[in-house]
Image (tube, rainbow, N blue to C red; front, side, top):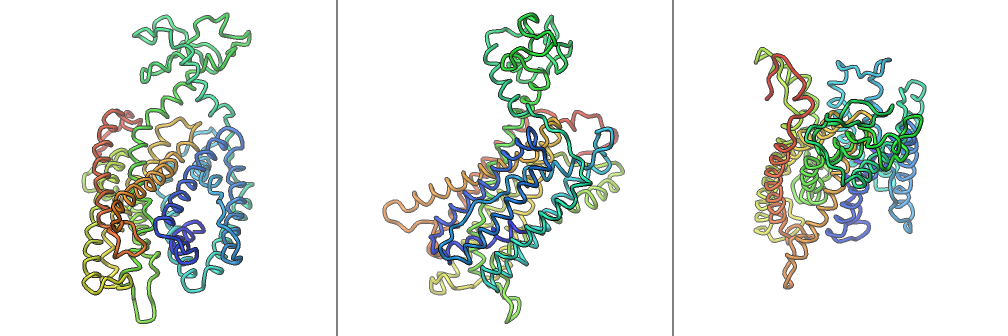
Length: 508
């Protein structure tokens, strides 16, 4: 609530209060979004390897609260500057820390509860965003920025206190101090042993190094060149008397090799999501577009422009919240057997919906702009109803629900449990890179469209700009991403769930 209540209206704060141009303000928000989604990856590595998830969330909560208070100060003190935020600590571990609470005493996850965990997590997550985009934004628009930024600060303080009050009841998983280092050790060891020739059969007269010393078990055949990192070539030289590796940068365990393999295998699919996030990170223009529509509910009440994005949130909540509880059970009853939609298929649908959203946005903006120009070319002409924006918002919500949230489920199931914090934040890293790519694409479009002294497509005056053309560029990028994803999915092969035998189950 605190984050998205601030982020939803930030474009108007920068343009109206800081008198920034649209392109400059958008670039700032792209970079802010990138930092907001990149820092959790660093936080995840720290959580998994050193501090643990509880301490990371606790420190992140305190940093977040300080960031909110500092942002509030920019509205109170004219000389204050916008500060950095602390989301890297909270978002790094919250999902994985919640999954830790589902474990039984023997360390195994309660499958009956875990099946619905991701759906409920994101349903509550999106519900908080919904409250931020309505209640907090309404306060900002009607009571000013001083009160509007005070509310998120109080919310963050309440969240931090609530988290620490629950500390006696939390399950806290022991950290793996060598996780991140181990991934780099595999790369270095593979390079050092690059001249060693692997036999065609991995089980042929080769001893592989395991956590408790050499053992007959062998690594997978995928990315075989990494297997050189875990081969014991000379036990006398490679091992110490207690059977530990003399040089962990020359000899790694099979588990370390498999962890890196699992991470590298998901990178191509992750990159397709990164490209889709270019579409989802377009937060500035929708607010500008919504401000140029008729948003009156009654003569005395107007929906804030930023709050129209709740349509995206509601459509996401409906899909994520109803998928497991209503839609799939209903489909199973109709089919007479269990029905499931695989994570990779859901991600593919999400990319298709993002392409559709960009196409619809371009068409609606073209219609809105044409009508505005016919009525006098003024940027304050609110001619078309805000209801025209509903289809694009709904499609973006479905793209979010099908792809963004499913990515975390996919990574969490495909990567080893020791990497759960990193797995739950890979999609955040994709969003970070996607935001940087979005900034690059926007700057390129702006520069090219301004060539020769022409009016640029990216303009603070929405009717002078050509945002319909800009969104057609994004639609073309999304179409190419669909083809790219299909290629990556085919190359990836079956997922762990698909390899697991399932009786009498259909897949949609």
